Image 1: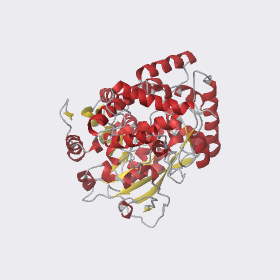
Image 2: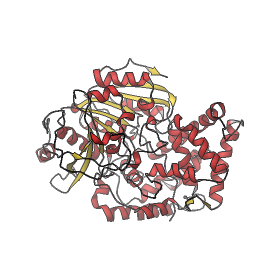
Image 3: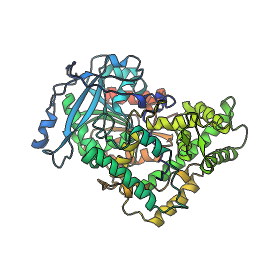
Image 4: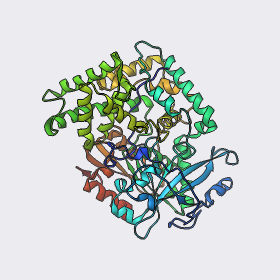
Length: 528
């Protein structure tokens, strides 16, 4: 088996929710009882079905049973108020009388008089919105918690929403321990074959669901959720990939758009190659920023007082040393260059995690790669006992391969792209290429090619972009705001991924004014 380095994973939580602890990814809502049947406070179930095709009305008018959620981690008491429910949706919206699947959601009641539901998606694709609801204190402000029932959901194929099953825990460990794909010594056919085998295993275990995990289908599910929650319009807060989901929803259902906040915008027109190049460059910039902050502010900075170029070169040498030898962690697992790269990328999502990167790199320079491997584990939802709490790794691949067609990319184009990556991002570029070959090997055809969205006729939408965001570069938010007919862009001049949960009062005040009062910030507003 040949394993390539992953594309930079979009954060499963906004920055302030502590990527350092990766708490969200370790959650579990394993019980969906019917002991609690209280209806959401947004209105009667099936509030708006006007314009819905007759064959879909049974989904829009269904009554769901709300039961207790069980979490395997500490949720600061949130589990006492949380309720979970499973909603039935068509597997294929072109065949609504055919098979169905389920979408699981969790609801945290408003602390005051609820004005309806606030749907949230923490990103990914593949991150759990059900878990995110348990950590609402890190995701929304107290004022928003007072006003809305916060509702998270696991999109179709993700987590407990009839999540796809591809590899068991031991198999996923083994897959992650395989050497990365090296285009200099192996043909791209090898990575196609690898992902072909992997995808075939997903299909064998999960059936047709693997072909129906595209973002447009998940957006259609969102409108069913809106109806069963009793809301006439959708109020929504999406981070990172969640902005893509929200924008596609607005494009499909502009008349049902309420107040949508899209934080860390994704440009839907980008090819996979363009997106990877932008992210590689963004993470390289943020690594250099980490070096500068480390040297100026972090006691015991492991890169010392060397120049930024010299410090990044030292990190590059560390990664290369793992490629050249056999490295094991304290638990006996093999550590690959892919693991090390993921371990470095993860703390770059939030400046509050910078000290943790210093500690992990310091240990690695001393020969102990366990902290970096633990950070890599966190991106895949693996705990210290070797259990994977979710299917984010496989869902990430399944959704991306469905959403972004790679069928027309040639070997020569991939080779040129690899050269571009290594020039743009000397540290990370060598490990982020040839994703097109992986999706070309995926056994399910893409659902659609990248295309712009405009959501013509939708109510005003707020897009938030961080100027030095590594995972969703600022110009993606600019492009998304430009495409959406009714969008307004709020800028946050800072480093890290997404803005609202960063703790910046200017950003939070502006977003809250929109969510609570419908007031958009002035054109050109920048927080810092």
